[in-house]
Image 1 (cartoon, rainbow, N blue to C red):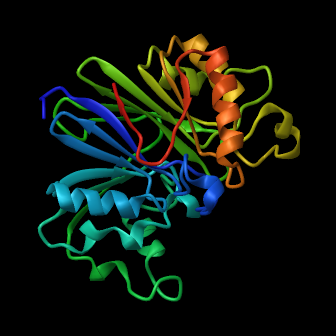
Image 2 (cartoon, rainbow, N blue to C red):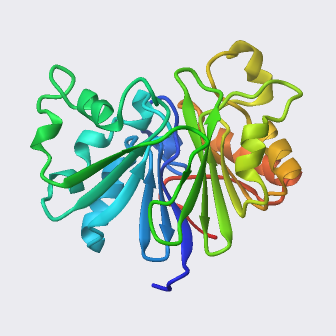
Length: 276
């Protein structure tokens, strides 16, 4: 492990619900969960069904002190939380962050709401890990670990959502999911998060031809992602939050079309590791 290593691992890339079957083998079926490694520091973004294998991996690698950040708390971004093995181990230190419900609900209140009967049979109190909760507001600048700077911004999604810009050793990863764009407009909050990023992870749940049917759902398209990356001077674009029904064959077509328009574009898939 080098002191300035910077990489992203996708543990879950789907939106809405997990999927399974032969038509979903290549890109995977887990919902949102991303691991970011910044030298000695481990950051996890969202706790969808991909949070379970992420937790198992952390235990196997002996990573006992790390941060978890929530973009928001819709089901597809939280359903892995009760099945995250590190929460039940007394030697683990988990620092949890959220800002989308600032002024409405604290991070600890949010976690307790996830894990309580009748929705889950046992409460958060059963967890033996040392859990620290951190509240922030969108647009705050966070410094969770030495040398790590995370800039935040509000996204256009029902119930609020926070986008993140992770800066480490002179490089940048931007996470912009979930958000809905307005036709013909480049969201200044999103552009700020993406500015000169080495990698942008962007909500590509829909394609442009579908947007009129799904206005108000809070999602975007690969075409808009490319426009934003070009305007922001970003280098690579990971298409993320794939529609639950999008098959491997359909995603392969989207990936091919996107890469023709923007050479740095690719479709994220479960277990993919991207060096920054």
